Length: 399
Image 1 (cartoon, rainbow, N blue to C red):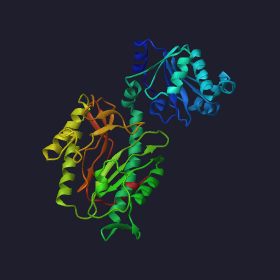
Image 2: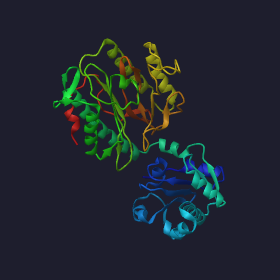
Image 3: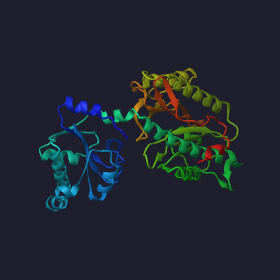
Image 4: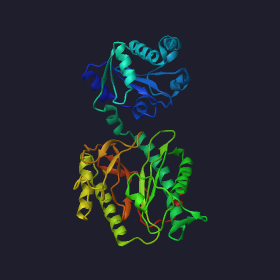
């Protein structure tokens, strides 16, 4: 994948800095993005005016040569790594190798991301290199503007996500009701059973996740409560799934709220208000508007219906108590922000739209789609139906 690092190069030139250095494993989104390489152990990526260069262990060297999207690959052993470790210890020995690697590329000063290891930074300074923290988050801003290839990666993760959501909805729709509890195959349908089922479905699409939200009743009134225990009839069930493709490392994200049984008038009203806020926020998305303006569109609807938002009451504990959305890509939460602080949206930005309403006495409601900002508006990357009443959607399970 071609990565346009020109904003980073302009920053380095403007600040008269020789290079940009990342020291992390590929779980760091910036590391994965700049190097195009996936490795479980920390490695070094250097960006200079003549290209992108990585320093890796011998264990990863062969793969890096074949897979990393860089100009040069160097292995630690080229700097007599083991002798340096024996002579100076693991910490200082590795720092001396990195310093030698930088010297070979004519680098005497580097900018580093905010999360750069303090030990490496201090060690390089002891080796008389200049190390400054880059305050602007330039690489994250570059990552925020997705290429067509990246958008397709997100789209594929979202397709897997929708298949998992169909499994969840089908389990809820098909469950029996016994003493107010949903029952599947003779056993209570618990949050844990549902999450296991959706994780199995995701594996068929080469996707996985650390956790998901299947939260019923008062649990769903806490936006990040993962949920536990039996799911109950006549209560709101918030289902939020956010898998990551195991190959591309891009995320999907979708939320739906279901209720099996009979909703109260208040539950139904909250659902409809949330849906109106979600539709208003979607309608506001286009290049040139700010994330703050999109957030305001959702807040306008919710406040007009008589509910608190953090805009109307920063101390609110019920109502709409989070932002409208966030960027999604190699990280589940990344730039841009769809919040009171959200800046201008640009074509290629992939964002969630996810207003919600929360009250422990009623439960939680959240509806979330994943969209990409286009030249003339937006494209919704989410095709999953929005409905409070659960239904079987076996048509969505075709792989």
